[in-house]
Length: 162
Ligand SMILES: [Zn+2]
Image (cartoon, rainbow, N blue to C red; front, side, top):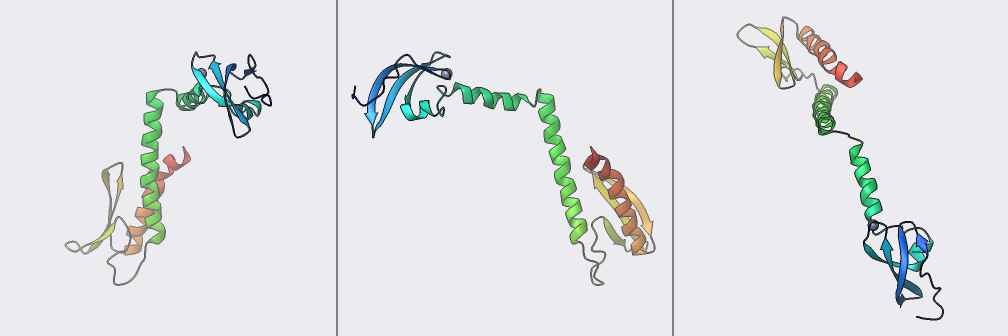
């Protein structure tokens, strides 16, 4: 062992207990440690002293697991996933609502509102959770758009409020 290297044998850093000197590395010393979990792990003296290295890696693995277990059950994870899908589709709808254009050339320009040529009426509908809900036919386009907006509020707001 290099005489300038401070002997850390037997010292404990977090879960690691230093067992033996490995070698000097650019003024740093590499030490062999044994972790509380039983794994052997080599670490640099600086890392140990600064508290950057506290385990063979099992500590990080465990805290990572803890994070996942915050979503306690598979059911909760599934719910979170479904919720995300719902919110994503809402985002899509809301975005389309914001970017909709009401030009004269465009039949309606509004998602869920379209001209019914046979009946000469504006027809409104909304797709929610994969199901199309018919909202009615209207003489005035504005009424159809309003029906669509009302439906968006009715169908999507409860989820947004959740
Ligand atoms: Zn360990």
